[in-house]
Length: 280
Image (tube, rainbow, N blue to C red; front, side, top):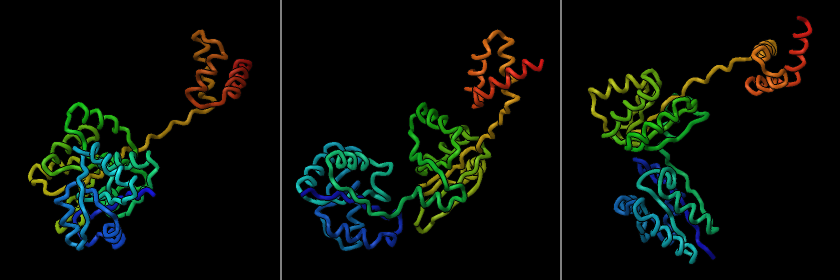
């Protein structure tokens, strides 16, 4: 019988956020796969958990993933943990999950902290629909293309950023979305100096010109305002049809063209256009 892969969310700063179920899971699995064993051993020591640790991270996930898979197929159970937060979310753990799923293994998530969701909740921005964008690439061309693709995004956007890159990222966000776009800058979440600053992107740029960024950040950026759709009436559609007709297009083709661009019924357009011509 195959083992189970458990995805165990770990605290993002406050050890009290680690759930009893998470502790129980780590106590019962055969081994733990950790992003950084030096970080995870501190967590295990705090809760007096004694389990074998193996390393699983961005630079070894291909070979380490195969080794973990074979142990799972052999009947052992494994808990996957990251340094902080939920495994497999913007994390190489997604590759291990896919590998295990392809091999028919059972995968269970032990919920807990997720910095993106926590920041979204306290941002004061719309939460009904959002898009998680993670860390922006340092490649300037790819970074610009990524932000350009989000210029018309209406959902709230969530980014992660390190303190030493914050100023550059804020400048790039202003270039993409403008200085008046609302943003919540959430830093050091669940930690002693947790803080959320709600302002515009322009105000954030000005603030951090005089203040040094400290701690890890989650940036929650408002989406663009939904565009107001122009309602095209049947009368407007007929006018467009007749203009195309005067330009030499057949009535049937003109009706089809206008219908595709306005969503108006072809039959209704055709009948109204004929009636308009009859009235002349």
